[in-house]
Image (cartoon, rainbow, N blue to C red; front, side, top):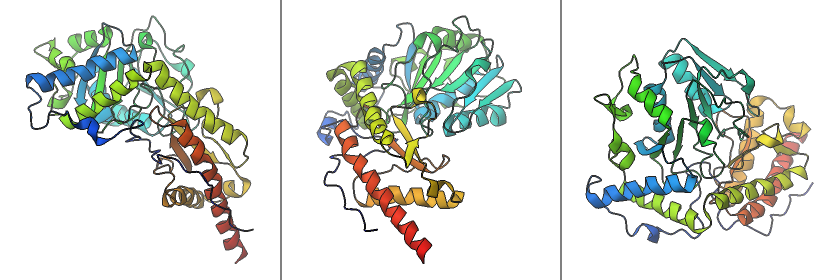
Amino acid sequence: MADAAKPDIRPHNPDFSSGPCAKRPGYSLAALEGALLGRSHRAKEPKARLAEVIERSKTLLGMPADWRLGIVPASDTGAVEMALWSLLGARPVDVLAFESFSEAWATDIVKQLKLKDARVLAAPYGKLPDLAAVDPAHDVVLAWNGTTSGVRLTNADFISANREGLVICDATSAAFAMDLPWHKLDVVTWSWQKVLGGEAGHGMLALSPRAVERLLTYKPAWPLPKIFRLTSGGKLTEGIFKGETINTPSMLCVEDALDGLRWAEGIGGLPALIARSEANLAAIADFVGARDWIDFLAEDPKTRSCTSICLKIVAPWFTVLEADQQAEAAKKISSLLEKAGVAYDIAAYRDAPPGLRIWGGATVETDDIVALLPWLDWAYTQVVLEVSRQAAE
C-alpha cells in the first residue's frame, strides 16, 4: 500500500483548539490599539470598559433584565467555584457528571465541600445521565455542553418550572453558540476564551433573582476566601456587577473581549453565532457519515455538540488494540496534522477516550473545517500504514 498523497487544500486558519479558541475572522492586534494600558481598572474610563463588556454580553445573550452579570477571577473555573462555595449547602444537591469538568465539580462538592446530601448522577463519555432522576427540591449542578465529551443537553424539560432548588450551569462552551433557557437556570458561567475567541483568565458569573435571594438569606458553614465573596454586611456587593472586579483584570484582555463582542453584534448577533457553529457541526457530520473509520463520541445525534466536536476511531483494527496503543495511535493522527500545519491542538482531552476534538465555535470558518477534513483521511491512512508495517515486521 503506497502512502496517500497529501490533500491539495489547506485551512486558512489551522487553529482548532478547544481553548483558548480561534480568534474571530480578520482579527489582528490592531484591534487592541485602544486598550487602556497602564491605567487603574478602578478609574472612570477603564471601569466603563468593564461595564461595557457586561452590558454587551447581557444584550447579545438575551439575558433577562433582572439578572446580574459580573466579571470574576480565574476564568470559568473561578466562576463555577464561586457559585458552588457561595450557594451550596442550603439544600441537597444533584450533580450531573458526564465529562471531565462536570466530574471535577462533583469531586469538589463531595470531597472538598463534603456535602452529605449530594447525589452524583453520572454517565460515561458519549452519554447523558438519567435526567429524569433530577429532584426539583434539590439544587442542581450541570454543564450545558460537555467540553471534553462533545455531548450537550438538548433542552431543559427535565428542570421543573416550579423547582425549589437552584440550577447552577457551567456554560463555558455553550454560551454564544447555543440557546440557553434562562427561565430554567439560576447561575450561568462562562469564560472569554471560548466561543468568541477572547483571551484567557477572566470568567463571567450570571445570577438570577433566585440566586441573589439565596446569597442574601444563606450563609455557608465554611469560610470564603476574598475572591469568592459576593456579599458584604449582609448585602450583595453590587459593584461586581457594574465593572468593579474583585481582583485586577487585564485591560488588554478587556479590549480583546470587547472586540469579540462587537464582531458578534456586527454579523447578526446570537442567531448568527449559533448558525456558524451549527454549520461547522453539519460539515463534520457529512464527513463522518460517509466514512466507516470514524464516528462521533456522542452516541445520540441529538446531543452532538456544535462547539467541542469530539470524534472516536471505530475501525475494527483500532478497537482491538490495548488502551495505551489506542491512545498512541490517536495521538499520532493529531501529531501528523500539527506537523503538516493544518490543525493544531485537536487531540482528545487527556481524560477522554482516544480520538480527536475539533473546535467548531463561531469564530471558526466552515471553509476551514471543510479544508481540514480530507487531512483527517490522510493522517488516518498514514497511521494505518505504520501499523501495517509494524505488523509485517
